[in-house]
Length: 586
Image (cartoon, rainbow, N blue to C red; front, side, top):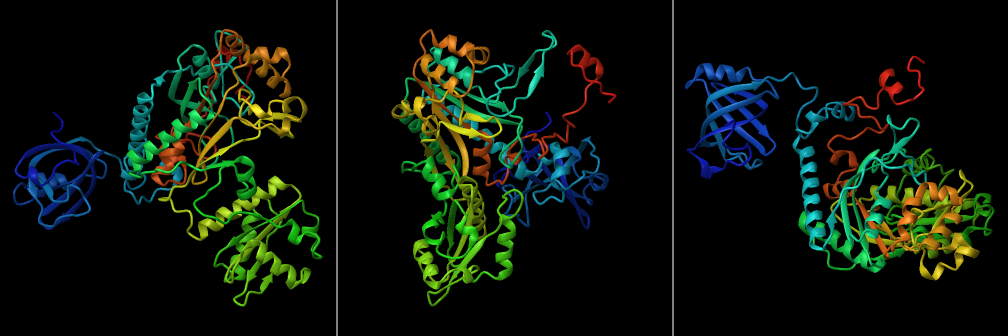
């Protein structure tokens, strides 16, 4: 056999045993007549000892080993004289009697250690080497643990794990599809699923009652730290449920994961916040509630009470109070101004006001306002001496709130209020049913066309659809949307009305979703569900800044796999077989 033990399991109790280990050479150290080799596998590191006096030839071979060589050794477990308290195997070493080089390694392009010298691009190109690093491997082990606990929890609640197709029809509503040409159906295309939404609804029509799937989803959209072209959802659906049933069950799942994976017991119900309140207080439908610094609207205080035209012309003026930051220097304030003026945020500027030790207020717009107005500002903001008030304004209310949200998060980071080991969870509920799309020139579904409106708002579908709220809910953890779902429409007439509001002709609705509408004719139960983002959950539990680090083979920020060099061009012969009229010579 290649090994009797792994490199992470031997302890002092094993002293005297003869063992066989196999793995990768982490490092080689020569000290006098002794050579020490750290041998690594997935399970840990064990120190090997080669003694020149005992076996000169064996020691000479050990001295020629290079980093990442794959070797097999046989030897006796021995108690170490100088123990390493940082390693689980740090009390023992192996006195080697036999050495076999299974595969010599070229010099790695970066060090295979936690504190590597490799940058993001080179580590992604050699991802199979990056995955040997313990810190990266632990993320995948955590991911595995979470998927196992998800399956245990859902199985205990009566869910069936059912696979749905990867090649489906395109549904242009929502993000862009990745499309796949069909060789046997010239001119026609499959799409890779953005989610199994309609398929899981069909499973409810089929009487499966409770379905889940840990499933790959694909969206051709611009990338951010919490997005990838392909990602993994914990996708779930339930029959004969209302919103309360879904929220209760999946809040239970979140508590189960915190308890079993992180050892954190969450006993209190998660707070619920209407979407309108989240936008008013935080400028985001996924607010980070680990810290306060909520928005305060200042229209009554600053609009028309001074000669500052920027505020007088604004449709929204809002501020946040940064505690203890009145001592910020001009350089620090200029940095904040530059931050909000970045193209990603797009603000025109930033106004500040310091609350002095004597209670007076010193502001960057002093010349436009009396001290009386500034003191009223301090009172409205509930600021105290030593606080810094930061104010933004604009003509577009929602856009300005989102800009102020970015400033709030930046201040939270600067003040150390976004502790990765602190978790604040809530449900955001009562989302708008529709949102206006300037690009499309029409109302679009904020979630998807199958979301059920709140019963009390259904009459508004005829008179004021923009005011309709949805039976939709998102779970938010530390400012990250970790899951979202809704109660679905199961009434064909209501679904037909929804399509009309969204601008679908009867023919288009039938073409894209006829299979679902036809199924509903045969007795669709009331149903609803939720999808958790597995990648996001793992990255939160691991304290990562990006979901890339918990995916085995991720894409870069341009959506490319630099290891496989994909996407790539294909042969003209393949294009011809697919009936795609592309000339690669151009």
